[in-house]
Length: 122
Image 1 (spheres, rainbow, N blue to C red):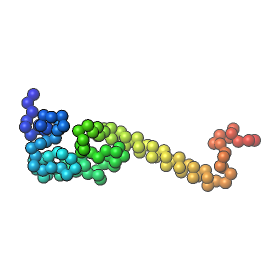
Image 2: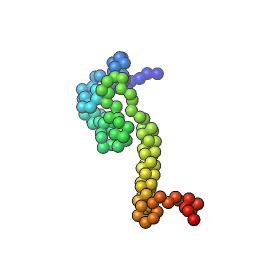
Image 3: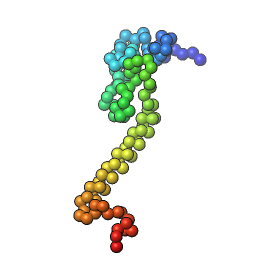
């Protein structure tokens, strides 16, 4: 299989795996370089833009910026989507439980009563 020069990145060392070394436009947030300003802007928009995906903050990730060579890779797009769906479910359950608690506290004499009629003294 032949790989075009445009698709190659890195300089053959483990420190620079996946980092384009010959580009003239440096990303301000990572070591990646690009051949055009447009390519750099697209990279920043889809990798580093803090407004793009709230889950990056939730996961504690700052995109693909590598501050050190041993840094772990961030969650894949599929994992982020899955976590987002789980987070939405948990938030919905929490809101429902809070609303139910507020409703129970608003009714006099309900505090301390069980939900089951058999829990009440006759």
